[in-house]
Length: 373
Ligand SMILES: [Zn+2]
Ligand SMILES: [Zn+2]
Image (cartoon, rainbow, N blue to C red; front, top):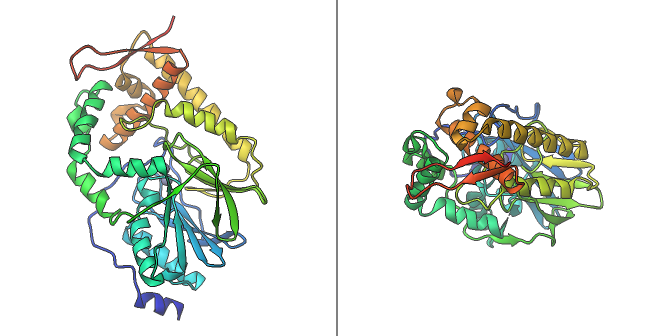
């Protein structure tokens, strides 16, 4: 009966041809979605929905539904693909909900696998509730949504110069193709009509819980996590993942030294009393401090490896080619490898282990990194 009423009010989904996109995870590893049910109650009145995503190596994103007195809160949404929509239909049917039972949508960060369905879900829930269903996102993440999805032409030129600075032999070939951008837009649009701003340090009621909003930059400049100190529940997004290392990358629009900010935010959260962390990908996470130590150690190793790979002097691409074996990477993976390598090299500069030689007047001349004496 519940299913029938859902079918009477289906998500109206456009048809589109979605190209394959790069994984946003460290692509030397891969992650399977948690085995078993699409819909699982992971804590009292907190339900995980495993939503498939078309990124190689990532498999699925975890979205969460929290039951409250005035309706349900959705945390992260997945992209608008047929598989993803099927997962949402299954979740609502299993819980006996309709789209109008969704009272608010909260996003940990702007990445498409988290933001992608928010606009359509907001529109549909708002129509049924005859009011605005808010989509919450931090101020910096809202800014990035504007940067990434507008002025594409200008941004493409800037990205090509960026790949040249990184020393790629064919920066134009590495750049984003219009078909990729168009395909992704179709899986995201409509964007949320309006956002409400998550303010770090403030609290927000999600379902029956009151969470503190924690700014957790690194994977994304304005990434937020949500912590309930009363029971140690942490909605952690992509800041800390159980089986893969979150991608830390430096792109032209990213604030300086993302790896430095990531390490600082890992340290800041390390001693939080976390009984259960609910990540954006993979299974439940309970060994909180231990996982943070593993991530810190991983990046220490990567920093040392990249420092060694610089030798007497090297471009970003030359380092990436050694560390990621780039002859085996396709164009998408190459971009990710370069941006992740750059994040590490720039952190070595910020910590005085390397210096960056500025290129001359040639706008395609690469940055060259050298060890400090
Ligand atoms: Zn992400
Ligand atoms: Zn993600």
